[in-house]
Amino acid sequence: MDDNQIRILFLSANPRKDKPLDLQGEYSEIDTAISETKLGEQIQLYPRWKVSNEQLLDHFLRYQPHIIHFSGHGTDGSLILDDGEGHEWQLDRATARAAFKTTAGKTRLVVLNACLSADVAQVLSEVIDCVIGMSQEMFDDTSIVFSGALYRGLSEGLSIRQSFDRARTQINLAGKVGSRTPIILTKPGMDARRMYLSDWVGPTGGSSGPPLPSELRNTPADRPSVRARIQVQLRLDADFDGFVLDHFPDVHRRFAGGMDRTQKTNLLLTLKEPAEILAALHRIPSQ
Image (cartoon, rainbow, N blue to C red):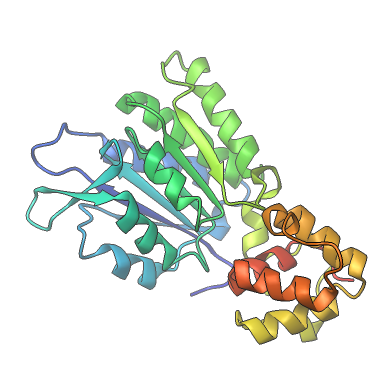
């Protein structure tokens, strides 16, 4: 996979007995929005239609997407996939969480453009940095307007939060209903206002400051390597405490009086996956 390409995996499913959706129309709207923007050449959109339960993990592994966009039907607590024979198969919350956790080291944003997908979005936000879902039923034409505006904003360099707000406003400007239906959720410690597509590619995976020294690049996502990276990049205790407060406030709240730097680092590495700590380190200037 090209580290300089942002990969979007567009998944769709519309089993035979369910109401037909204009999935091709939504895909075309997203594709057009991306192609007309300044980051368009850096973005690769991969469509996969009639996604079945047996294909889901294979698609995640093959494409290693930065963004996963699901377009289809949902019920209260489940997404509707294809069973491989054209019938519906319900992906419940627990199974969805386990499935999406397998790609959490790479995937930064999941968009569930499906009715009543808020419950699934909630559990996915425990393992994915940012998740967008729908709190109630969504009309087909509204979904298309929302998706087009969302990806146009992202591809023009806006943050996820700015793009989300823009897309909801565009629903009203287009004379559609349901502008309050989309919701946005983030994993603890993440801030959608500070998440940009351009930060996800390149040799460091996205540094918001000056380029990192060569010895800090390509750090393996394992605990010993991340521990060493923390020591080099965050030399001062104040820098370390500030880093944890900014990116993992839930961990910072568990720091007890008298804990030393080693104990705090151990707690951070116990409560958070090395990959997500590494991603957060990529987004701060090198020290």
